[in-house]
Length: 196
Ligand SMILES: [Zn+2]
Ligand SMILES: [Zn+2]
Image (tube, rainbow, N blue to C red; front, side, top):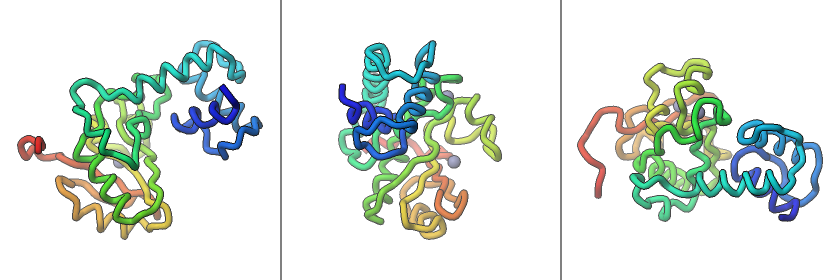
């Protein structure tokens, strides 16, 4: 595995935010430590064979949709399932205490395509532990059931994004979190099945 590949995998899982350029600096080392803290027993900051084996395993798991989640992910080109993983870092769950809702993910893709700019998910699915840690989160948050996400579209202010999100199907919660990020929650009220 080259350093560039390692950075790519760390970035894919959300541990590395720097340039994927194959230059192994402090940011790459720190991302390795963060990954190891989340998934391995003894973090040493060295991306050796054991870390390579482990990261392949983690990505394999996160890429493989659970049996019940149909395969709508194949039609989702703007987001990966891994972007919705719980950010507790393995302390409270394995990353997916619930599956991201198909309605939610399809709406996010619609918004992404509408604005034509890069989207970032800051929070997708949450376990109880992670949800309780986040200031202002509701005890019965839709994030716990994979029915909410916090995201932004780069270059679009949250009021504009929020107004658009409100027009999408099944949206029951839409509000601006700050100047960029919007919370979108779907299917809060049961409307029958979403099977098309
Ligand atoms: Zn968790
Ligand atoms: Zn939220």
